[in-house]
View 1 (tube, one colour):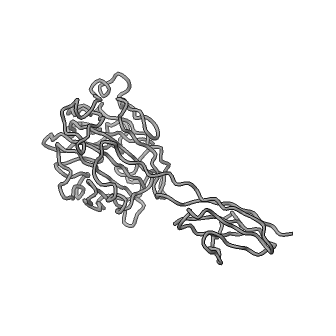
View 2 (tube, helix red, strand yellow; view 1 turned 90 degrees about the vertical axis):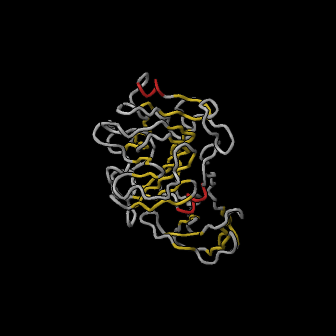
View 3 (cartoon, one colour; view 1 turned 135 degrees about the vertical axis):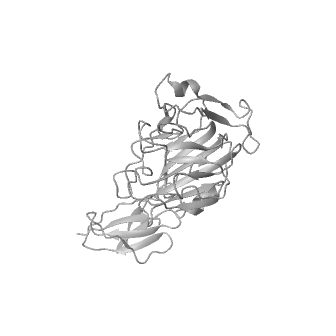
Length: 319
């Protein structure tokens, strides 16, 4: 008796997945993707009291590429460690460590010059008390620590920019790649390593928070924030370009390509849609530690297989 078993999967589409996005179009902290942001010090606290929502017109700041945009105004008070927004990113630990080592943070943001540095992200201290923030804007560049602020100076105050920090603490070497408006700033390798406490994410992070004494803060206007599991490639970050009033674009949804099976004389015919360009048909004899191998004899988007006595599993994979 011939035995055939089939399974199909797709590895198509981007290598990253958007797990959180916030666009502030409704004048609150609701999420476009994922979980809503939360005021760090709770409902009715200092953060909520001082946070404002409106349009670029309301705040009398530049529109984005000539178009008004809905934004959040982040308070820039010095010395107040209660200010910040909890970001539950929804990314499972990755990269072989106990924390989230591979992720990409993107913001369309307008920083008001405070004469110094201004916190963008707090990672290591989830009560914002033990140390400084872990990612800062600093007079045209962004990063943290010695060797962390290399760049072209393109992240200027008083203007809209799209900043991207793409983290890979499992890389060789571990790195944070930084982009502003589609232009590469640096491959930041100083103080990077697997599960690094100031680089790898815990269950949540705190946006725009600076730990005690909270003296590196500034007023900021933010139109869109996005976080992805995985590190975007340089080409992908370049393609994202500069800020948009519509917010950071979400990647297109890629449908999995399904294998169709039909009996033909002398065997079976496996086929899949002609629109599924770039897929490779692979087979394995078991799903326990499978050794997937490309199937020979594929013509276009189909292949005829002769009858056999051994069970096989098939999948479509897109590199």
